[in-house]
Image (cartoon, rainbow, N blue to C red; front, side, top):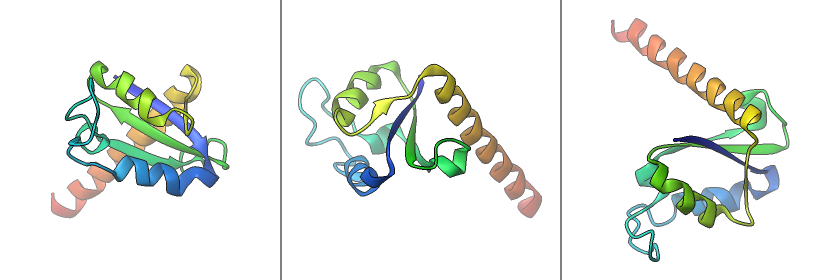
Length: 110
């Protein structure tokens, strides 16, 4: 599963706090015991970083499909799932950035 959620830029502090809270999922209620954003992994990008709306913040998640209900419940009222077209563009931008970083490290240590 790869999915993207978007939030207004003025919610950055609140979103970051939520994503960083409870890294081991110890406080997650049933049925999400032991689930956390830290275990799932995510990338948080500002709109200008991924060539999208500059007043938006994008959270990219990759992992098991089991996490999608967890993500939706935690982000409810704070962020909404991006439409498929925007999600594809944001995911491609993040993957391009990661690929460039890997190549750069290869050039340094290669």
